[in-house]
Image (cartoon, rainbow, N blue to C red):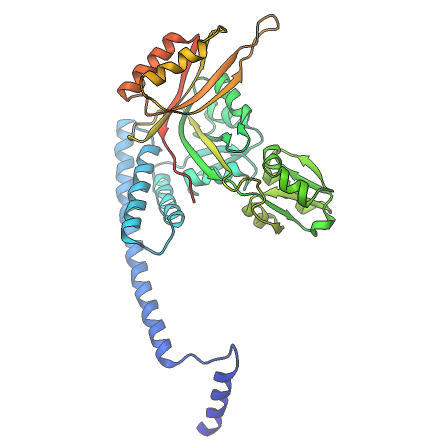
Length: 389
């Protein structure tokens, strides 16, 4: 019998894709897997030990009336972890390590309280992805139909926080968000999320069969050159979100969508073309809206809006305050203020400055700004968020 089996084994070993692994390789493979199993046991033990300490912190926070969500502390932890990862030279990329620890912190935070977070939905819109990037999966994510509703849900106490886009590197400010900051002055920016935005063309049909392309206005704008060159025959149709666009592309013959890769997976769409944005460094910055103030970390920014008198040099005088204090402005946008029919059109200015409002020179500069302007409000101080790779 052995003599009959031996030629068969040799034939299998010689056949492509049917090779019999040598016994030595199988032994090595088992040894490595045994090591991984032991490491998994240690990882689980350490994760549970860490969660127990997080639960104790939650108890102390409850006793002292502190907030469950602490973006300053979470950014500090992530920075420490990524610095350590860089020092050890591990094979995983920073994005993967950050995601692992984000979910560990998200689950630990949920032991204290499951936060409710509103975002511009539906699922797998870029606002949804930004909410996950900031809070992780162990929260109650609530998709709503408009940016105004994001603010309303937080304002009414239905949600603890909201996530809303503030600006895009291609198209600039998001007017709906800035308008809501004016309408609801008691809500603060508690944190920010910077998201590298990549757009993809997806459909159930072939490229030449596409007659309509659905997406959010900003997404279509960020891909305008690519679309005009590659799908010039298709009508562009604006909808409320990129995720809604993916839903329509899944249902309608001859329809395509510009949306995220995750939206294509969710709706079973074919990715016809990837990364079709006109500028490869396309980025959207989101604000986390809440009622809480964030403690200083030493690497913060402060957002404000202010209104100056409608006279020559008024804006220059306001900006001179920051120049004199040697405080850098990282962003400034003008925005029309609401006025009556008989009043002249006036403008508000939104700005981000480096530093925390509790920093001595920042606090002094903001006081001078308040004294100089017709109106001024601090929207919040919070940690500077890194841009995920």
